[in-house]
Image 1 (cartoon, each protein chain N blue to C red):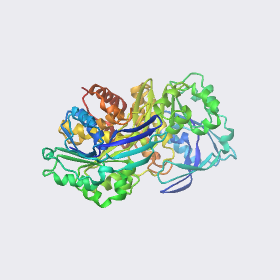
Image 2: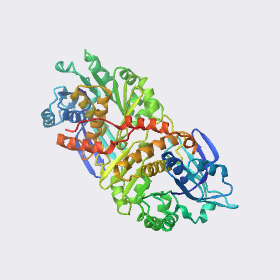
Image 3: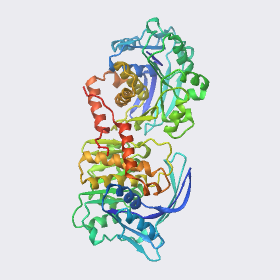
Length: 304
Length: 304
């Protein structure tokens, strides 16, 4: 089960501009997870300006959209951003919460026993409300958040962090959350806040998975061109939890594979604007790229 | 054979300050390479203010120092720099070329047939002069350079790049040398300048090895603390060529191991000020850390 935004985005990158395309954390997460033959469902909210055809498209990917509330006469959440030449820095040009402002998540009855729960980036009190509605604790709860909630809802964030297993955040957010510059020290401080697993996303520099004194690193694939980084972090998270859900295995060894798959899918996501690339991504393409990841990282040295 | 500076450094980091310690690219390279049971020799220049005891110490590591010219009444090259909190940015406070200003490299007769030649960061015309003095082409020539020479000796740099096999540079330098932001595209442009292998060092984000359409990535070890990054790039290069020289194998598979060893040794170098850590580094420590690199990067996914 995936909780998160379903949205409209306007995006400008050095390669072009899109005025109004489908976006939102839950959309990216669900599209990534759909690659792993899992039954998934989104809990979210949109206005009645959101295209019914896109919800139907998500259904074709085995994503249950019946938990997406459609608010009559409501306007869908809208985000607009502009990326600069290095694609690592961006300005948010507009954030119109619209129907998200009064969002009260309602987990449909048939979703009340998810094995895997993904809490996409949203107000931590919404994330907490979803946890409260689920009677039996899922096998794994993954939470994504961002600096905005650290600045504006610190106490609520601290509460929800106590209830989860895995946090996925980027490097700057990990530093802000922990007050530590070193990511190794940051992970140690974040463990003390609740999560047993800390995943730190470093964009083009890959991602680190910390657990119980151990650390694993998934590189980003070196790409000739990054077209649009929007949704790469959500795609990473969706690939991670989707792989774990598809294999029903939450061992650390399998989580290593999960972050490799997350990085794998994110490397596709950035090839086109918005969700475009993920919409027609095929399993053979993912498998070929997995081979590239192996060639990129695997070496053979005998320990003496 | 190693060509490069042997110097005094003054370093300030958030962890402390050293007014005058031994540094220089050739020193770091030679200390790293000395871990691989190779017969190495330095071609360089110092003033008679340089401690004879340090040259004797290098000799105990099987580093021949007879090619280091000692200039009577000369002052050793001096560099001073200050690092800021993130240790990724630094200011150069002083560069006093001293005896380096008139350095005419002289390769001693007994060094004239090196199998492996490391051209440390120096004026490209000095690097070229060393290549000229060696009658038989070495098995492998590795060159390190920096943005300073791109700004001030472009034509000479272009000449020497035609004569080498491997270039090691950092990400910003690769971008400047190629005019490309994407490191994949940068490597392609740099191939066209001469090198068959391009190694791009990304500091705390690891290093990429490009060759013939293939790419391999060696991560940096995530560290709790980086004490002083001075010499990390030179140590990386010394570990790389030292491992290749010690194994007499310049296949791409072995170069992958070389960049892992380079990253391994660099992770030690940054633990203490200057060359301090490398002076007492032991083989069992390197072997233990190699195991950490394996755990950090190796995963097991069946390709479908």
